[in-house]
Image 1 (tube, one colour):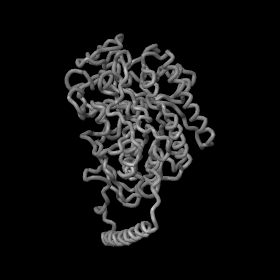
Image 2 (cartoon, rainbow, N blue to C red; image 1 turned 180 degrees about the vertical axis):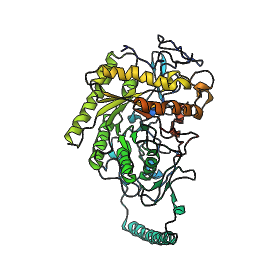
Image 3 (cartoon, rainbow, N blue to C red; image 1 turned 90 degrees about the vertical axis):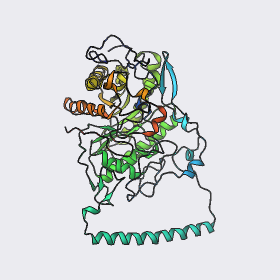
Image 4 (cartoon, rainbow, N blue to C red; image 1 turned 135 degrees about the horizontal axis):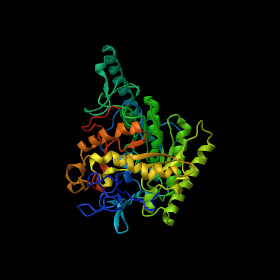
Length: 510
């Protein structure tokens, strides 16, 4: 195991073709930034931003006929059923002001610009539980006259709804359940339809989709503090769609009721799906504790049948210590932070007397694994992105496998507990928001961020990884337009666009 590990080319791979040097750790692209070290340059790696999701994302509301949630982050363990818990614009405007950075916060490692995750306290600094995005601020008391007026309006609405329902039911009966009357669950380009408007488990499959992915990385829409606008109907729709591609999902955090919303969607759709709930870790210990409470409450409510393990942290060690050394004090301190939290989560789960033991581990950059870290976790999930490894698309699949084996699988095997290893993220971007970033430094189109190159990566990685036993989470389900402020290829890693439309891709059949 090398003492220093960076995002280096695997011997025999790289921009020069099949003869990249195995001795050089750092090479410079034509634009002047070092691509072998994946956090260098002006383009932050996408997996480093996954703790937050945009409250104003363009992914459309759908499945309006499915009851959505009033449950807030603090309301667990009650299952999220009832009216929508999406925030109103007025409630947002009444919140305390936030200090949100206009761009990613830069830091310097060895003179190279590295983009850091924005700590959660940067987004929200209020100590009031009602103002941290977990529930709406307490509304002012209303007069009796106002309540009478509201009651009258509500009664009128109930009468109107009853009339509409009567008309709809009458039409449905007259149509004798004709399948042509199926309710669309989304826009006109929807990839699936509801066969039964009241039963989320009854939906028509999209013939273009195949359950070929071992697993997929997924962030529900609108799970960014403090807004917490995630809607059960949207999450349910996502699960209907993603269940046609995979049987496993990984999450990134537990803010905004995320874990419960996803488990509720799996329960309602009755699909074959398991998840890896996650607790995002940064310097905000209150946020960590709140997420731990939320995950435990969701497990109490929904059980463990659809849970495979719990992830503690996403690239916490990379953000805290970098990858320059796996033996210095900063690295060892960051490892201790994570392993202490892993031990706490394991202890809490043990005390819950669950019907099975859930493994607990962490997710981080593929180059930071060490036996020291391995000894304190049940599993390690490694982010391995060929785009940031200065690799041509035709070499990307082989490079990903070799990198993962050398820096993660082999290292884990040296630990006494030999923790399980997974590729936490791998994929290929399909676009960039500026021409300066639409190529990773490889000459010609082989390094382009493009749908064609994503298709090549799908064709050369997915089925091969399934066959050789590599457990991976494909990055990612949907494009995320909110990341455009970070520049480069950040928003464009989805198999689907942000409106749930499948990109011009052919899903492999394995």
